[in-house]
Image (cartoon, rainbow, N blue to C red; front, top):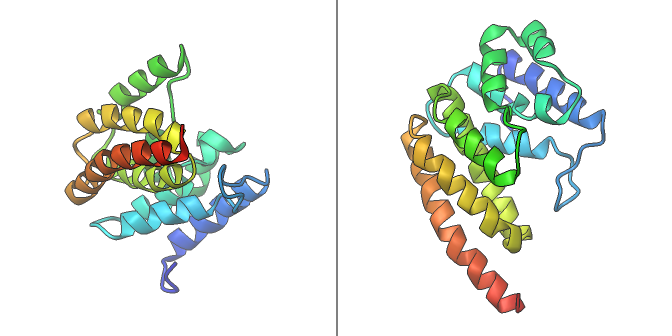
Length: 184
């Protein structure tokens, strides 16, 4: 992370780190502190045209979904613009089996703001890299779901959309190759 980050981004980083740290949240495959993922997402977002609100929301994107933080907490601490972005990034679909939930989430994501789609693309890029590296069996399922979302989530940053799309396509072949080489 840059040593020249804004006070807003610094506050969001500290807040997200505390929220994830309070539950000893770690990355599934590596066991590293979870905050590494939101930082990576924020860094990907920072590589394209962005606002400070987008960087803060990228850092906070999993706090409501994964910790005890509420939408009201985000609104109180960061204001309505960032709270809206974080809610757009928070999974809203909890009914039905996995396929039904992911399909409903794809529809929902198709209509979120351009800024939220840009952050979600960065999230997909980060997660795809990690899942492919550590769980090629699950990657096949995950990549099918992401392809479904990418087909309808087309308003985000064009360069991240292109990267997410090509990464998804290449990762499918890589997952197949890894599974074959492991005898799965």
